[in-house]
Image (cartoon, rainbow, N blue to C red; front, top):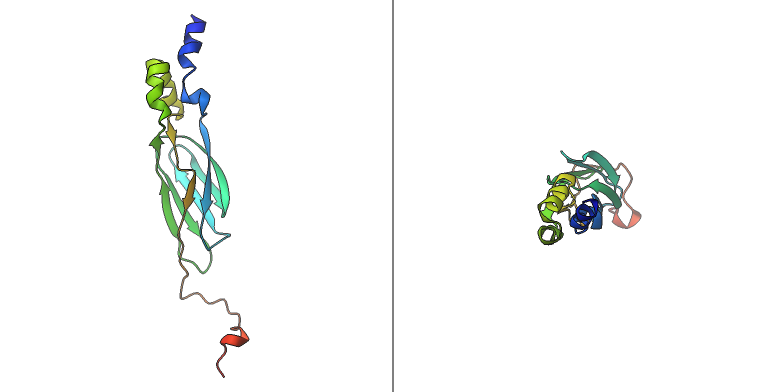
Length: 137
């Protein structure tokens, strides 16, 4: 009986792909931004860009909010998509394998990278004098 259970679970995404995933977070042109990733399944995690974060796979989307002085906050989301391996799991692991993958989140995946766009805050002044080439004469 144990052998049958092991064989039926051998096709599971839980075993093959696991329940965690790394995702690269970038803010193109704005390195050093602080990004907070939030969802019901992962809670809240913080990463400085460019950076990589490890997420527990889940069915809910992950919201991303990035901030940095003198820039407007950038906002984005990582949608949770069903991994193509879940379809094959119905054949290899049956309902049991599909249930295990759904319960662990292994049947879901996020995009491997998120680029969050941030724009300069025009009202922000660094207080530093303009370079000599930009000064009026």
